[in-house]
Amino acid sequence: MTRTATDLRDLCREQLRVRGARCTKARLSVLQVLAENGGHLGALQIHRRISDGGGHLDVSTVYRTLERLAELGLVHHLAGTAQATYGLAVHPHHHAVCTGCGVVAQIPVPAVAEVLQAAASAMAFRPESLVLSGLCPDCQKQTQ
Ligand SMILES: [Zn+2]
Ligand SMILES: [Zn+2]
Image 1 (cartoon, rainbow, N blue to C red):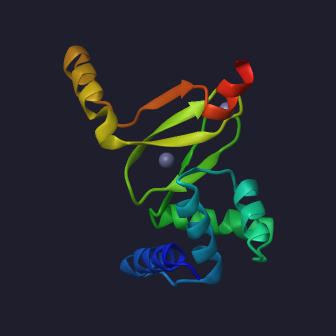
Image 2: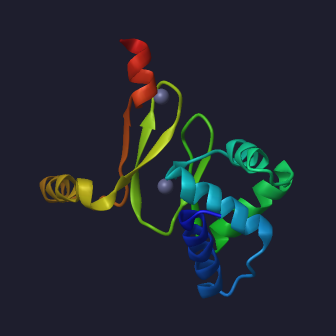
């Protein structure tokens, strides 16, 4: 196992333990896929990646695990896109959604902190999360 894989596994274990949750194989696999991806994935995509990695979880287990992880506050889901996607909630982030293929990327909070602050003071609005729409690198290539 590579160094990063071990680190990820430890991080996931740690996060489950802090919340007093059992570190089941299903939970660990789902968290690991999300941590490796660095963005949001739909339940079916998560299922496919686990299978590709040699794991065996049926789709309903993936859905159930995601629900439980969301209750624990480890995962959150972004609705309102073509399909509901799930991302790690451990590191706060905003979202960028591709209007071409629906892929969801995570925007680090500091990257847009100033913009949100400016918007907040100009509009007396308290922004909590930002969803940007645009084209992902793959879709940009296709329109060229
Ligand atoms: Zn997210
Ligand atoms: Zn795209």
